Image 1 (cartoon, rainbow over the protein chains, first blue to last red):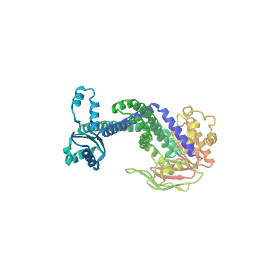
Image 2 (image 1 turned 135 degrees about the horizontal axis):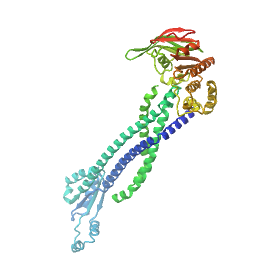
Image 3 (image 1 turned 120 degrees about the horizontal axis):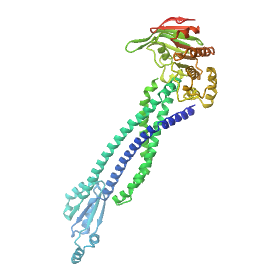
Image 4 (image 1 turned 60 degrees about the vertical axis):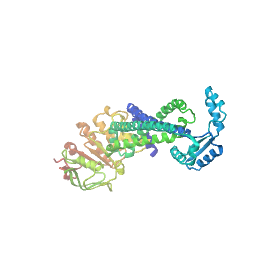
Length: 305
Length: 226
């Protein structure tokens, strides 16, 4: 009997869906737009997170030592810095390697190469490249160095340029997130109203049937069932359509991201694949819940017969 | 079968539709409830099928106190009380068969059982050859017979007919009254709500007259007195 009732609820829901096909199409379109805008927000979030991560990984403090500072002195500084809790890793570039790097960098500039040849001693000091555990730790590391006895050994330190880039990315992604949130909020609101209205219209067109159902002893869940199921249809179809739209879009964006980040490590498609059920499952669940609440409110007055 | 004990219904702020109704309707009885418009006849029916709840008093149907019936129990009650109305309440896009089947479908009856029951009730109401017609293809009397068939599919112990002949001519009215009497002979308690004196006078069964929300007379074999 329960199975028979469920099959009938399914049939009634399908009939209602097809008989009001234009209303169904409009409702599904709005839900699809809501899904796409939410996924846009997710993409922005993921890209900005990845961009920040990639840049943060590239950030380090380069400590350029004076040319007359010996290797044991540099290694002593390295040992001192290693003891700091904020420091993640330190790379040592010897004077020789530093000179070699400098030569390679300026290979096209004959004047610099000639000048280097004329010098009897290596004019370039050793370098320590210090990576912090967190980007916010860099000022503290520099502060410690500035106040230590080793400060006089160091010719120059660089860090500030990266900080500007990171701030810019954070500010850009924050703005994009705000736009995404507003867009999603607007679409969620519109989708809620349209779903609510669609179900109301569907219920209104069936009011006579509902009255007869109640009169002959149909239970409330049987009366309500087709409308709730219809609402679930909208959610599922819209979710499938959103997946069909979102995947080609991220496939289109991916090569541009690779060019932008100069790396192929970061893949939006992989992100969506890895989080498929979490992303689309949660979105679907939320929309179904929203639809069920809307239809429950819309049908309430007709159930009082 | 049906007991109304000190039943009152007051609509806010202070419109008394029923005042202190005390009635006892026995099983297999045919009872006509008569009265002018606005005397509370329909309110009594609505309370009986739990569309409304009484303000005061008790109502017992088949030993079941439905005065404060729960929402979840209303479908059970309505499957035991068949109801027909003046406006038939048929679904225009469904055939005679589908209209009657609908009452069984919504209650979870399986297809085979539906196919077995419907020809039987159509035979009782005399529409066995019209099961594929749509309501618009039937006369008023035939439409009311479909409504009666729909009310009978659950094999109710009580059939309530609220002004069933209100939209019908004299010939169809007689047919419907005869049908209700036939159903009563099969053992179903029938409550006929009417303000048509000719109909009530022709039946020669118990007549309860309502006036201004109160029972003004209750005759075992009565006539329309107002």
